[in-house]
Length: 242
Image (cartoon, rainbow, N blue to C red; front, top):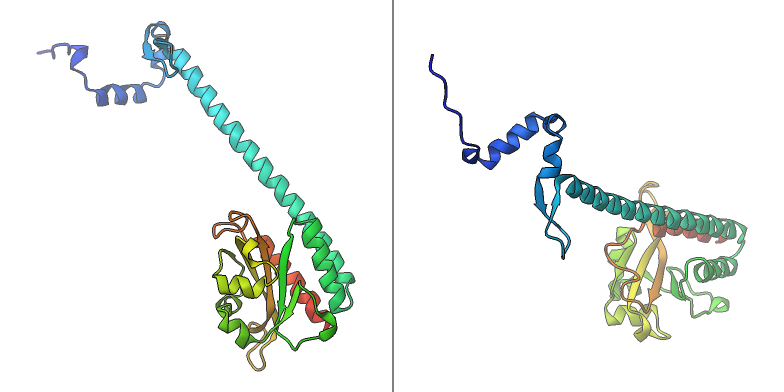
């Protein structure tokens, strides 16, 4: 019987070596001396070579640092979400205690400033004006006026939208100092159900516009879950206040 001549190790391809090591996962445990004999280029500048064991230790350290960074990020996000939940709960309690439209406006103003760091906002209500409630924070409008401003699509969508506005929209929403507003969050407020259309179709009651001089404060990629919760609470409070 003929025997196959032994292959020169130099004839082995990289793929064959990789396949062999994957199949023989305990190869280095059977040949531990190789772990210290193998030399690899060092990843850090100023050092020529390291052993395989040292390289593995370096890789494990890098993986641990990456895992630690991810964990810190997760903890920070969880902490922020917990704080947001607390502030939304406080806003809910304040709105429940509000028995009139002025009370609702006052509770919203205080909560946005103290708990959410919002210094500029405008609450647009699609209803007849109330002269006694004239305020820089509050404006009354018709749906036709909102449509002329191009805000009807936001109202119809019924979901918060963040980013930049056209100059005309910014001037209309923040007439006091529109030039200071660099980014905006638009939060539609649902009203009563449209007649003969069922509870799922609700007429817009208005719009809460949050403004910031920071162009990155409100951006299209940000989560709007908490803004949607605020919208639900505020819409309910406005409906109850009449």
